[in-house]
Length: 381
Ligand SMILES: Nc1nc2c(ncn2[C@@H]2O[C@H](COP(=O)(O)OP(=O)(O)O)[C@@H](O)[C@H]2O)c(=O)[nH]1
Ligand SMILES: [Mg+2]
Image (cartoon, rainbow, N blue to C red; front, side):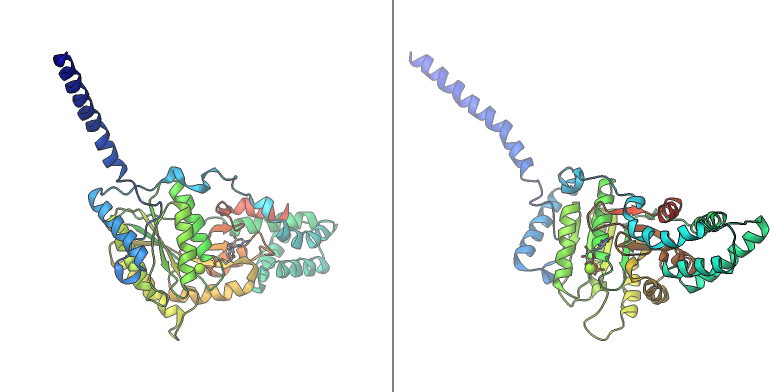
């Protein structure tokens, strides 16, 4: 009896040891999971205590397990609606043009009045005086050469000419082929939609398999960094911020270094549209551009964000920014609003820079790559 009891006791003890042996490593792996989807990677000098503590936790975790895991499968926006199409969102722009265009289309001959009406419609559609004159000169030549004789043919030629002026641009967003993270810098005046666009781009790039870090280079207000932090969380991107009023170049430099140390593919850098002191915004931006390229990263895109509803004013701003930083493309936001759309033609014509992305709303999905043909069709159809 005693022998049987001893055997049973030994079996139970062995069973416990074996069972524990299996469970323990599983627990250890579990403890390597990120504490949160969203991690702050800045050093202690620039973050509040609880964030610094979280950052140091992350540092320890990263040191123990160098692979950064971004929880793409948990991204909230994964399950949301389809991408919008120009046609569905350009209703207001189309309405602005359709009255005049309908009247021109119904004309049985092309006379001085037809030309006046067309000129007025293009100016009202925000094409701008310079580009409108240019378009009209071209159309006059076409009418003569091709013997166009009525309003409908004239509109056909206008559509073709607009599409032609928008074609032949490289609208691809570039990633660096060299080692180190690619940096996409977003510039533009206050309120145009820089931070929102970075959020949308981040969501899109993470979904396409890139690892992304967002750097809060708009240090003008703490709320700006918080807004970007929320987008980083939503996208499943890393996030670096600095102190309110801090040096934007330093924040972006830190972001690039953090991304490089962690093998992150892409840094999306936000910038301010205004400044605390009297330092010239354009000087600040050209410094940001230089510094962003200095470390381990490569700046492959400098995108000017323009609010389409500001019409020709957007073009004036664009010229100032072009002088300060070499722009690689334009993001045209709020084309879903009261924008007239003609600004797209003016940007390509006057600046020679392609519109690469278009904002068609405030949501994560409301960002589309620009398609010239689709745009012209949506504007007139
Ligand atoms: N309708 C619409 N609103 C937008 C779009 N992009 C941004 N916004 C809104 O514009 C406002 C300013 O955007 P924000 O990203 O903070 O501008 P920032 O100051 O340039 O960073 C916010 O209310 C955004 O939701 C867009 O494409 N369409
Ligand atoms: Mg902002």
